[in-house]
Length: 270
Image (cartoon, rainbow, N blue to C red; front, side, top):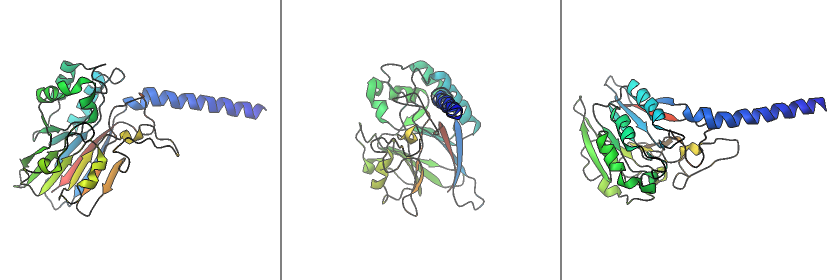
């Protein structure tokens, strides 16, 4: 009996510790993942930082956004890409000026680009999202793209789809201005990638899934349009790679467990 009592006491405190960690520690962590893509033949890499699913809310205020800005700027990126969901529910918590000021401090000499997420349409956020991004120096890609010249004479096309759940995404429009050999396409929802495999796109960046937020054995929580492609890298073809960012914030419940908030950094050899 004594051994059983000790076991149950330890088990109880383990559960309490896990819950405390999931609600109060892991959501405030920020993990930076560094990846290298392409063949390094002595050329200078293009450093691209992807942010996704910040979900600013009372449990994830602007003070946490400032930490993200500091970590991103330490990477000294050439380009910053945001794959949507800035606020969790703008109608409940949406400090426009503070968020704009924080995002404006992100620095990238070749540009900052963003696309719509489903939460950027909901909660009244659609009225302010373009204004916030413009004020912070971001180019909002809404079925559009931009060719960016690189120092070595090459160029990269940064393209973005409108949100596929609440927007009106068009692949044809998103790629219509392409004049570069290397294409990066932003799509908030990753399962759209199956429609992109024959479009000569080298890198697709998505979010939306949060990696489930809670990673427990035999339990996987998936969002609509993030069911097939869920987290990390997927080689769709020999030439097309998808990366699903697990995001920075939380939604529905303010907890993460074994899915820490991430910043993805790509050194691209084009």
